[in-house]
Image: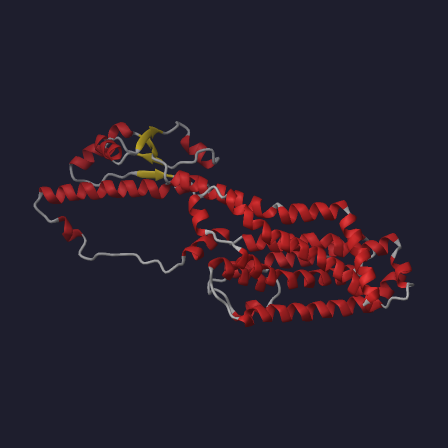
Length: 387
């Protein structure tokens, strides 16, 4: 253990002395929380602003005086749409849908016919799609008003149109609704830990082999296991440091939320941060051992980077399983590293309770995988240095 501690202190000092590592620690851990929350809240606030906008872009409003009167009574401001609104819509330069009124709208409405109103938008333009429901609600209210006037004129009770009253009841918790917007937070934290430990894992294995400093290290009295434990401890410490800073950065970052709705729903306190760390710290140690095990067989730093692309791609794609799985969470999700952490961190954000076994299973899997990787590194350490 004394030899492992000496190697640990030396590797950790070298890792923190590296400017690239320090820059990765700062950018990927301290900045990620405020940046992610600020960008997400800005997006939500912009969508809310467009959804609550009182402006309606209209083509041919002069053909519908009754509709113009209704929009004014609803405090909606009708503005003429630009002449090239279709091109602007396709190019995503127009952020509002356009209501198109035919020339004979008022005549057909007076004759009791059903004139056609077009709400022009583009499904490839999300900004314009936000206001579609607002315009449709206004047109639906106008149609109901016209129907009620016609029924009242003929002496028919308007209540006959709705023989059944329908009420909605949403079972989702407010935190669960917020988790639909903040569901990407665990993914960003996980990737920050992965990329933060990547440079240290490659430098302490393939980097030393490329520089020729691995052979002198093996000539010291320290055993191979001590060398491996010291190197792995330094890399894992860097990954864990990034995990701690990433999780804690979300605590003050909540003050940057621009959306009042998101600020009221999103709750990330010390308890949530502690649960995040309980899930991320073992994974950081496991990913460090896995990347070192892949890099120990590589001759150069660049070759080790290319080989570890598989790990990065796998960790990036595993969370997509829960996204494309319509049947929800499965019991085997907690047995897969990275996927288990994403799944359980999502539960934390939704405020759902989970048993201690849900934490112990990912911990046990991470410990077994890390132990297997460390044994593999110890067996191939001397062969990698002399080959």
